[in-house]
Length: 526
Image (cartoon, rainbow, N blue to C red; front, side, top):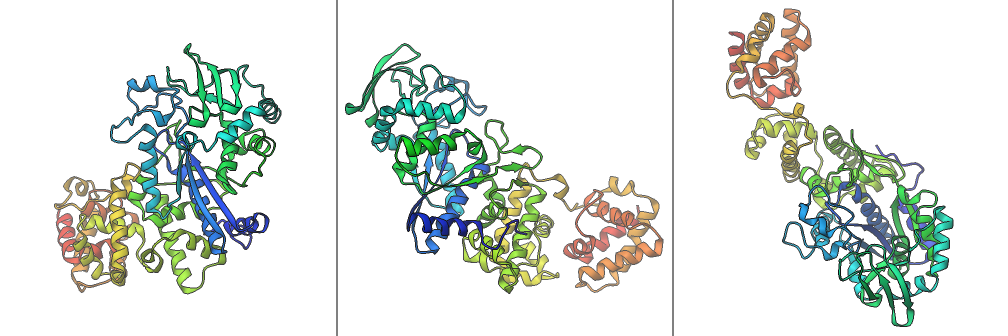
């Protein structure tokens, strides 16, 4: 169910406002620093930008989505996944550090490419901008000129807005030292704006000249962001709530944009972070992450989009890759049925519209839940042909008409079962032989119930449906006057060797009466 408020979808409101106030040409933007595996939480900003771009284009605007990778940012620390030898690279730009795994042009490229490939899978293909290449191409030269010309004003703005004093040697520009390779703060000793050069003294002791028109340094973060707005022509950019705190980088960015770079800041959208259920807000530094490529192994691409779009950007989104993921898949399919029948609300129609990216996902309708798919493929032991045979003789036979989509979901279900976050309670293994130990632990009445159930099921036609089988189970329960829990536990013990499992009637139907009758007779004789 949508958590939107009002009658107009948030992206449509923003698109209409942008066109009304800023005209018909727009650059939307999202940014991320590829300092490690880019987690699913970072996807929120990207999806929000993509959706606003689509909403603008639908209204006839000339809109482009630019994805900025802050590849000129420095490596802040030795992350747990890095070898100790990378300690020497701390403080250096990640674009100038080798790929820790050896097959990409740089550290930054390793994690940028991984994320970009995953974005393409979910239908997002923005214009990619690497910050280091922009600096080296001289794109920011004018902005650095302006920042250095008005450095004292820039410092005053940052101090006033943030409420904090700046370090003694703070400069709006950070040179890249060729001796130690770092791009962290340096002491600027002389500025020559006409030649686009500064003289500096590095902490390593090196004294040199930095030509910023050739990318031999970069603006400090508080100025880098608003300079990007002007130099890339950004008219819309979402950002996390951490940047929106009073005195934060957005507040300083607005004043710096207007007073230093003489441009209007882009239309903002403040979003809440994605929380990983049971662990908190996703954070690379805290190790609370799950990557997009891992998610895409377990759900179709449109569901990765839906996972974000089903909740308004201003609300915290709790992502549960375990049982919650199963519910989310079924929630989407319920919405799809309403869409195709014309019963969906206008807001849900927009959520669905911005979620789906291929005709297969748009048109297919399934009666079967993802939980059933997960169970069925395990009953079939991963064999898709056997799974089709099981479906063909049950209540979900009509779903075979959507086999291409069902097959896609089944392959995702197999990957989900292998994922580290899949709960053990959802994993089943139908035993080839009677689980003697589990059956021996049953009461005499429970084993008697299994023997009696075998006789009742043997009298049914082989093509009996799940409801008929379910009634047979309950008839045995009533005849022996035992609790439902007791007979169901007996069924699962005989088939799985555990106390719980899928809905019994459907489970027995899926396995076939002949197999279950034989197994229950054997268990009843123990």
